[in-house]
Length: 95
Length: 312
Image (tube, rainbow over all chains, first blue to last red; front, side, top):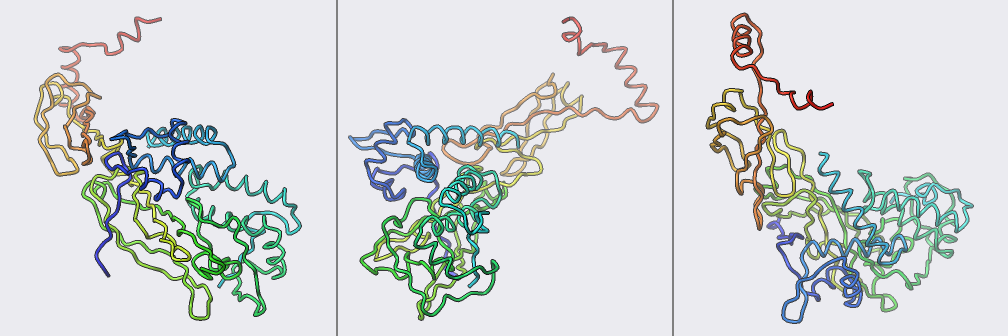
């Protein structure tokens, strides 16, 4: 067997450019702009460009899946995402 | 390959209307969608349901599927020799998080990865996801995991077959519970020369006998004697990096929290370890001990419920 594959940690310590983000999430820039305008993720502005954390990657992937698979609009998907996050937080606290 | 009964997967009858099928899909999606579901096997079930819906929602695919007749799920199956399904790819482009198909689906309706390139069909491979359990120690120190991934492959006769591929991944030190990691280019292969999708792993940190995790912080209940708490004492305390000395301040009570700075999970910033003191009193299980307790009752009379009693 070959040597273990290195992975990207998707947490707040890593940052991705808009290009990388679009590639990873399989979306066009306009979709990301819409998501940012909705306040679902807050990129860091650096030299006229945006940088997104690994957390943003997960949030964007989830919000797009929710939107597509339940046929809700972006604000609706954002609301679902926030409620799901809250449930997740509470569940972890119960353990 | 094994036959799949898509009607059974969706719990609908064979004469279900398109509306029935859509309703069943919605219900199952809410139950098994990996972002929403509480079920253990959600990922797998959602994939099955999605595949069944993809066939039953499309009148052409459904009609073709119905021609195969009713067979028991899991029965050994080969497509009829004259099977021809013209794959119309209006909507089949890779969606983020869309689930990969079974070999049964690919052999009947397959487009992705396989009869690729036909009609200029191009698409980046689908992203895949898996859950990985790690112990708290592994989360702290990092670990190497061998994952078994089911891949679909086309043999020289053009038939799609599942193949298990072993993949070793390095899990970095300091991963928190629920942390996602991306393994680039290890999702489903792309079609028509496009790159493969990514594999996303969600790490689940298993409960530990002593420690609890809260983000990157580690919590530990530490049993102490009444005299250690009252008089102060230095005791040995476990941390994920090994034992350390902890000074219990004089006059401590139960539930007092002491912080061991940056002794939690590594990261930027690293987590702390919080130690919660739990006073354990010895049993008065012989005459001498009973006498000692009586002596304390007399010499150190106190009412810890005073606040409760003065309030009406």
